[in-house]
Image: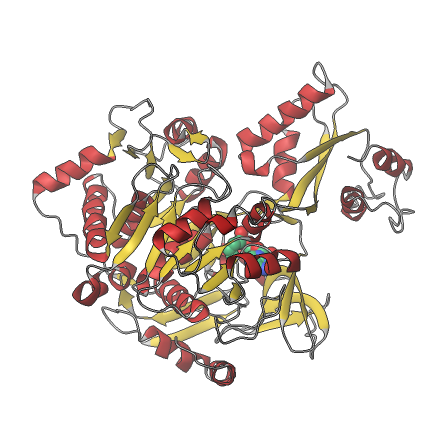
Amino acid sequence: MKISSFTEYQHIYQQSVEQPEQFWADVADQYYWRKKWDKTLEWNFKEPNIKWFQGGKLNITESCLDRHLETNADTPAIIWEPNDPTEAHRVLTYKQLHDKVCQFANVLKNNGAKKGDRICIYMPMVPELAIAVLASARIGAVHSVVFGGFSAQSIADRIKDAECNIVITADGGFRGAKDLPLKSVIDDALVQCPSVKRVIVLTRSHTPVSMIKGRDVWWEDEVKKVETQGNPACPAEEMDAEDMLFILYTSGSTGKPKGVVHTCGGYMVYTGYTFATAFQYEPGEVYFCTADIGWITGHSYIVYGPLSQGATALMFEGVPTWPDAGRLWDIVQKFKVNILYTAPTAIRSLMGFGTDIVNKYDLSSLTKLGSVGEPLNEEAWHWFDENIGHGHCPIVDTWWQTETGGFMISPIANVTPLKPGYASLPLPGVQPILVDENGQEIQGNNVSGNLCIKFPWPGMLRTTYGDHERCRQTYFSTYPDLYFTGDGCLRDEDGYYRITGRVDDVLNVSGHRIGTAEVENAINMHSSVVESAVVGYPHEIKGQGVYAFVISPEKHESEELTRKDILMTVSRIIGPIAKPDKIQFVTGLPKTRSGKIMRRILRKIAEGDTSNLGDTSTLLDPSVVDEIKDGAL
Ligand code: WT7
């Protein structure tokens, strides 16, 4: 939505709060619906029950692909830059992407996929990943993309939870200097997953893989079969607005990751609207989001949001620091990128390499910058502004979550006056409030509290897959009639929001969400570990690091080897992204008389601030605190 001034934003915002249904109905009108909805919204946050655009019929791929064919068939939809800069890049126009999606949708059908099936996608960042996602949506199947950094065990857990019957993967992938043995990881996962009847394998790395007769087929062979069948078209499956579009697993403060469910209509409306609004996207602009499609950022702001707006999205297979720390700037120069959307952790890590490398590149095409994943600290904000935006690009610091589907609190480029460190103001249609411990709304400005949302928005999660009660418990029971985000937040004298970080036991490591309980469970699986406690600590580049306190009386050979064994165990159980940065061996943990670990104390020690540990008198054995303090890393 074009917004030309701050006053206009304020006006639209006001309207969106006074008449939310009218507001979202007008936005929804800008998409392609087979049949218009009968009822814009039905909701309560008690159960919760949230239904947007009921009675509406659509297929999201028709808004993302088909509707652009008449006028924008030859506009690039996806520009793909490989990991290795010496390999050729690829461009897929809307017409080409449409055709490839239809073709692969037919491959899926030939392999027995049908509406409602769950399809697990475990792929490298190549265009075929976007094609697989869209093809799944085209036939009305539900995709569950698993990030390439998760272990076989994590994949198996996700496949079992969603009862997937098809897996789409690749022989291997490349990320920086690393080779990802994707198919081999899938083979390990599938030992536990009898529900999977078919594995479709893309050729990417040309590494040897095992192909099991009757189960595994090559992507390329299947595409050839469709070609020889001679009918490349694949009419889109008609979906109800509230039919499931995808599941994406995310970590919480307890137990195993939960499958966040998004539905077709609301998610389509919300991602396209927020993309166009926050970035004020103009036709022809080249937009580069550095996220992986394995995370919600890639789903909403590489695939669905930009494509529904007919935008040109740049997709990058590699990492910002390989072959050197100029990789992102090289890409910006090469494709004359206009909008760069990245993460604080990437900015901070590139900051460390200095500006000489940045200044080798022509970044004059850039007009807008964006950030997501964690608070963008002021130092990084200014570095990004001065050295990358050269002082003339607004920085859109977008606060949102896997569960929200799209941006919630964010500046609007060239409209909202910026403040470093602030996600600023809610987008139209979003109603945030701050509450105190008792759930009382904290009114006025210059206050802080827990961030909640008090009215539904179309992109919000509908349930957690297979366990609606868990969804209610996690998000809607802490404060009655509110959606609780899990974040702490302050609202300054101008009503601007600044996210201060999670208030639950969830860590944010390099923008990745990691549950402390999950890491503890993984560490505790190691044979010589009796108990462990995991907390976060400030980390210069990652934002937060993982600090593990571990009780392991009988170490194998040496402390160093046991430490490495524990890291290996966590890698195997969750994935390398959850590996603790520090492991401190202790003989006891600070527990209360009722057996609860006092994490507050451990957090302080991990932060290196032991001057004031607060009241330790309720501890069962206060002496363990001294020991832990003395051994702190
Ligand atoms: C959590 C959500 C949304 C895509 C990436 C992460 C933190 C996210 C910001 C921001 C401060 C942020 C919050 C949130 N977060 N963006 N701009 N400023 N904090 O998605 O894995 O679902 O994590 O990331 O703590 O709750 P996610």
